[in-house]
Image 1 (tube, helix red, strand yellow):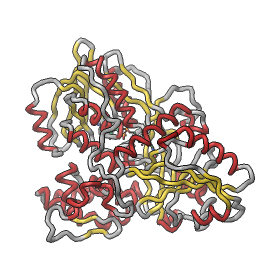
Image 2 (cartoon, rainbow, N blue to C red):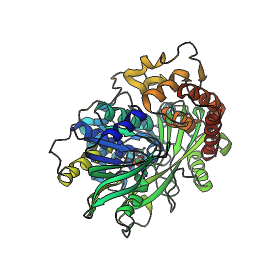
Image 3 (spheres, rainbow, N blue to C red):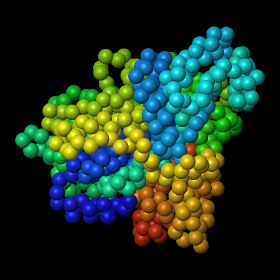
Image 4 (tube, helix red, strand yellow):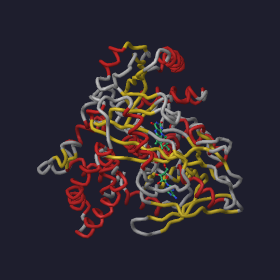
Length: 516
Ligand SMILES: Cc1cc2nc3c(=O)[nH]c(=O)nc-3n(C[C@H](O)[C@H](O)[C@H](O)COP(=O)(O)OP(=O)(O)OC[C@H]3O[C@@H](n4cnc5c(N)ncnc54)[C@H](O)[C@@H]3O)c2cc1C
C-alpha cells in the first residue's frame, strides 16, 4: 500500500471507476473492502490519514450496546450483536472478549440489570461471548479490587467485545488493498463533477504535493462522517442538515485506577447515560460524554465540564479516586448521528445508520457505529449497483478474513494487533539499530519503518496516534519520543531537517488537545 504508486495508478487510469469513496474512516474503509471484494474498480480518498476522524476516538468496544436496549432500540442491538460475532470471527487478532462488571449499591439493581442482560444474552444467541451472572459483594470485589466498597451490595457481569479502532482501520485499508482497491490518504475531495444534473465524478487535491485531479466514477459515496453535510452541500447547496454532531470525550488513567482485566460499566450517570472504565493496553480508558455541538472540527476539543463530569461519575465507583492531575491523555470524538430533528437531545438519537441517495445520485452514509461498519458497507454497495448500472454481485464480506488474520494471539503481547505479520515486523528494516524508543509503547525503529513502508504513514502524528496508540494513551510520553520518531522517519523518507522541525512543531501543537 504505497501512496506514490497509488497516485500514479490514478494518473494512468484513463477509464471510469465503478465506485469512488470519499472518507477513510470505518464506513469508507468498510465500503472499500466490500466493493473491491465484489470486483468493482474502487478508489478511496481520505483528506487526512485513515481513521483520523471519529474512527480513532471510540470507546474501543465491539458491542451490541446495552444502553440501546434500555432505549428500546431492539433492531440496532440485534444487528450489532450479529456484526460483533462476524467481526470476531473474521478479525480474531483485533477483537477480543471483555467482561464488564456493573457494581450495584441497592437491593433492586442486581435483579433489574441481571434480567436485562439475560435478554441481551438471548439476543446474541449462538454468537454470544459468555453468560451474564449476578455476583455477590465478595465476587464483585474479587473481580474489581478497586471498586468503591462503601454501600456495595453486589454486581452483575456480562460480556462484550473490545478492539483497537485504528489498527482495525489499517487492517481494513490493507484488506481492500489486497483486493486491488486504490486507497490514498492526504487527498481532499474539493468538489463534485456533474453532468446533466447527475454526479459523475469528483475533483480532489493531494494536500501534500498540492496537485489537483479529476476522476470519473459510476458511483460516488460520501462516507465523511460528521463532514457529510459539507459534501451534500457541494451536491445540493440548499439541502437541509442531515447530521447532528455529538461530542464524546474519554480520559485515560494509569492501570492502578481499575487494576483489573475486567471493565466497569456504570449504568446510570448524572445525565442518565452509561459510562465505561475499560482496561486497554496497560491503561484505563474512561468515558464518554454526549454533548451536542455546532462546530465540526478535525481536532475537536474537550470541554472542562466534560472532563469534570467523567471524573465525578467515575470517582463514585472507584476506591482510588482519579483527579485531573492523574489524566495521561484525553481524546475527543464527534458522533455523526443521523438526525430526524424530533429528538430533544443527542442521547436520544438512534445510533443506527441510514443510506441516503440524492436526486443527483450521490450516496451519503449517515450515522452508524464501528461495530456495524460491515453491514453499513454491504448496504452502501447494494445501493450502488442499480444506481451505477454495475454488474450485480453479492456481498462477500461475511466470511472474509481481514488482513493479518490470526486465530490465537496473546493479548498481553503488544504486537498482537499485527496478527500473522507480527513475526516479520519485529526484525523489519535495519535490525542493527532496532532499539526501542519507548518501553511503555514498544515503539522501535522497525515499527516506524513498517508504518511508513507497509501502512502509508506520512507524518509523526500518523505513527504516534494511529499506527501506534501512544498519543491516545499518554500525551507526555508522545511528546518525549516525538523527536526520535521524527528523526528516524526523516532518515527513511529522505527528508531534511526543516521537515523534522515542521513535523515536531505541528505535533507538539496537536498534543495540547490531548492534555487535560
Ligand atoms: C466518543 C465516541 C465513542 C464511540 N464508541 C464506539 C464504540 O465503542 N463502538 C462502536 O461501535 N462505535 C463507537 N462510536 C461510533 C463510531 O466511532 C463511529 O460511528 C464511526 O467511527 C464513524 O465512522 P465514519 O467512517 O462514518 O466517520 P469518520 O471516522 O469520521 O470518517 C470520515 C472521514 O472522512 C474524511 N473526510 C472528511 N471530509 C473529506 C473530504 N472532503 N475528502 C476526503 N476525506 C474527507 C475525514 O477526515 C474522516 O477521516 C463512538 C463514537 C464516538 C464519538
